[in-house]
Image (cartoon, rainbow, N blue to C red; front, side, top):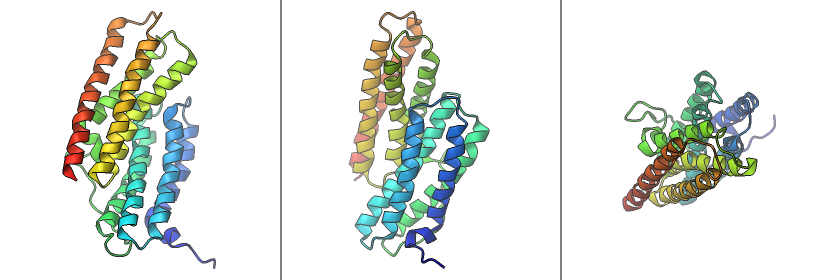
Length: 250
């Protein structure tokens, strides 16, 4: 029998492999590709690579870094599925098995982080939020607002009279908002969390500028455009507060 690498023996790694297999079917079933597709592919790979790195290290400090990156990537994958749902490109029934498997991965990674002063161990830690959701970022108002933004963009695509390139940039920047909120929530230090919240904030500002460009010479209902811009301003304000609060916790 071939000698296995240490990470290959880990249950959390095998679950990551299972999600990678599931990812193929999820992406193939989409009616069209959006920015979240590429993010899902990269984040899935990041889960596995960072688990492998964490399992090979004896330094607690270094191990925490890689476990945090794996955990953040798992939550980014969950956020990608939420974006597909918000855009009505995927059904709840199709997304639920993937989100449940990701919740199991996160549960183990959180437990590994808590026990990382010792050698890497695998236990399940309870991972239900105060509101009974699978992931802590789902409890955040700013995250729910960012999904409303993704849904708004999907509805407005047919109304914007602009280039396909501009629409792709708008999709990419608005998708970046919930994904970075989710990944930031999954990091294990306040400084790391704040870094991703700041990236989400910058994506919000960029999205506002792209919306202005998309509405030039357009027949879109300006009141509906204003709904999106109000949402962007609300998200930006919440991200500023969230970033400051995260830094204070360190």
